[in-house]
Length: 294
Image 1 (cartoon, rainbow, N blue to C red):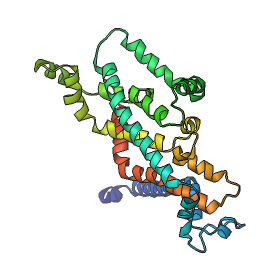
Image 2: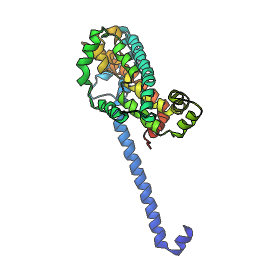
Image 3: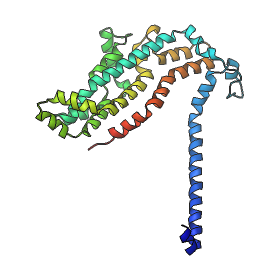
């Protein structure tokens, strides 16, 4: 650039102006992203701040963003009023059970749609995808009547048993798309050695699916940990409530203390936040891999 400047000063000045403009533009973009990020984070930051406030600070007007006094009892007092420990235990049982059921049931179904040739495969797969367009409310009444007739209401069975029968069309689609990216030459090599479809699934497909299973587990954990609609439908007694129903029960009391409510909301959302920061690289890697198709 020094030689160019000696040969053409106008071109050198234009180059410097271009570089200065690029730096200014980059600074502007970064500032815009920081401001946008802070705006989107404001509700979460307000929840964290309120969780440590006293009741007076939480109800103060104008609002107080930084607590004048840190009150840690906000995280313990609700456990004395409602069985939040039981709520967490129920949520963990339902979440882990759903994660196991989805992996065990959706994996062979997605494998069949991706790797096996059978009559009616495409129409059947389209029928599975069509179920994604059905809102939960459209199947609410028949499902409730069916589970009520076999006396499964107010138990965990309606929330767990269907997960072992490949009822999640989105997960089936996600797995199928990933299975299609695995070269079929591996299947042919296994068949030459005498392996069948089950051997191909267990010895070839599943060992290559760590990113996929990571994504599925993350999605299922977040969906089931935050689930509200179906637990509200099937669970009637407090000892069976999940954390989402417990928070709603805590919120609908005759007097709501906003500081303790925010403290319980922070505890409820903490597992998903920790999971995201721990597994975000695996999550993004799996999303990229499952979005690639042949």
